[in-house]
Image (cartoon, rainbow, N blue to C red; front, side):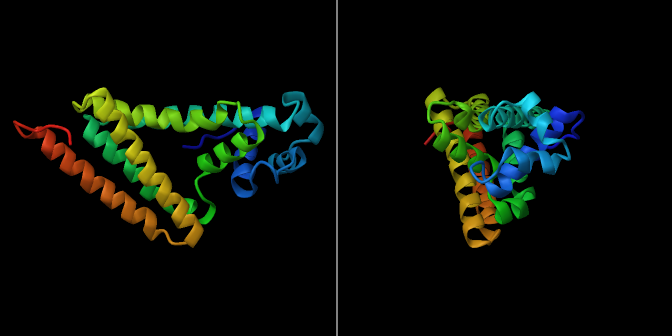
Length: 199
C-alpha cells in the first residue's frame, strides 16, 4: 500500500507514518520525524505547525493509500472474490502486524486520546468498513445484514492483529483469515441456493 515519497512534505508524512507506527504519536517528536525523513527540523514547521497537523496529514495519506488499495481489489470480478482478496491481504501483512501491531489501530487510538472530537480517529477504519458493507450489499444482503457482516470481518481481523501483536504469535492472524474465508465461502454457497436467505 506504500508509494515512493517525492518532495519534503511527502517525505515527512511517510516518515511520520513509520515513526507513529513504531513509537506511537505521544512518544514521537517532530524532531524525530525530521531526522527520519532526513529533512531539517525548520522545514517541518513550514509544512506542519504542530504534531496534530502532521497526524491529520498522516490520516489523509492512509485514507489515500486505502482507497487506492481497495480500488485495486475492485478489479476482481465479483464481491465474493473481492472479500477473499481483502482478507488475503491480512495474511500477507501478518509478520508486520505481529511485530508492530496494526498501524491504523495505533494511529486511531493515539489521535482519539489526544483529540477526542477529531474524526481522523475513525475515518481510516470507516473507509474499510464502508467498502466491506458494500461488497455484502452487492452480494445480495440487505443494508442491515450487509453492515453486520462488514463489521464482523473488521472485528475478526482487528482482533487477530491485537492478539498476534500481544503474544508475538502470527498464528492468530492465520486462524482468523482461514475462519473468515471459510465463513464467506459458506455465505456464498447459502446465497446461491434457490431458497437461500441471510441468517
